[in-house]
Image (tube, rainbow, N blue to C red; front, top):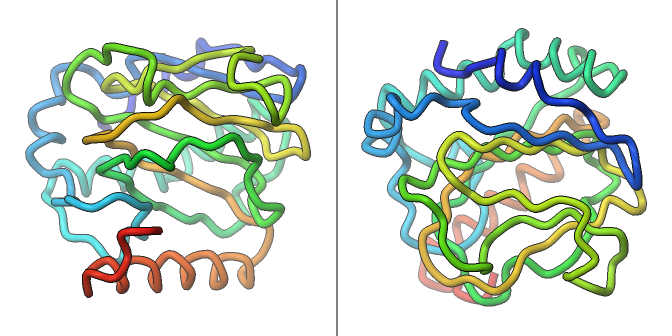
Amino acid sequence: MLLNLEALDRADVVSTPFPYLSASGVVPPKDLQDIASSFPPIDQPGIFPLSELTYGTAFARLIDDLTGPELAGLLEQKFDMQLSDKPLMITVRGVCQAKDGRIHTDSKDKLLTCLLYLNNTAWSGDGGRLRLLRDGRDLDSTIAEVAPDFGNFVAFKRTDNSWHGHARFIGPRRYVMVNWLRSDMALVRNVGRHRISAAFKRWGLGRGY
C-alpha cells in the first residue's frame, strides 16, 4: 500500500466551525518520483474525472488505495459517518489558473471531500495554499492552511459553512480529490459535468472553465 494510513490515523478531527482534519506524510517521500513520473499528463486547468485520463502504474496503485475499504473505514471512524455504501468520485487536477481558489462551499451532492497533494517540490509563497475559513467573504479568516506539498492530505465534511479557497496561483498544482456522494444520481450528475468540461478542453474550447 502506498498510503501511510498510520499518519492519517494520528490526525485529530477538529469539529468547529466544521469537521476537518489534515495530515502530512500520507504518501511517503520515497514514492515521490514513481508517482510523479506516472501522474496523468495534464497541461490545462480544471478538474478531470479519472475516466478521462491516462496514467502509469504507481499512480494506479495510489488510486487503488484511495478507493479501497481501508481509507473509507478510517474516515468513517474519524468523521462518525457512513461512507462504505456511498458512491465515490475521483477527480484530478494538474494545473491551476488565476480564477481558481475562489471561496466556496462544496455542492450538497458531496458528503466528504478529501484532497491528496502530489506536488514534487516544497511549496513557496502564499498562492495555492488551501485555506479552510470561518466565513465566505474573507480569505484571511483562516482556521487552517494546508500547503500542497507532496503527501499532504486534508479532509472535511461538507456543511453549509465549510468555506475554503486559496490565494491566486498560476501553474502546476497537482492533487487527487476524493468525494463520497449522497446518491448514484449525484455521481452521474457530477461525473457527467466533469466529462463535458474535459471534452471542451480537449477541443480547445475550455480555457474559461
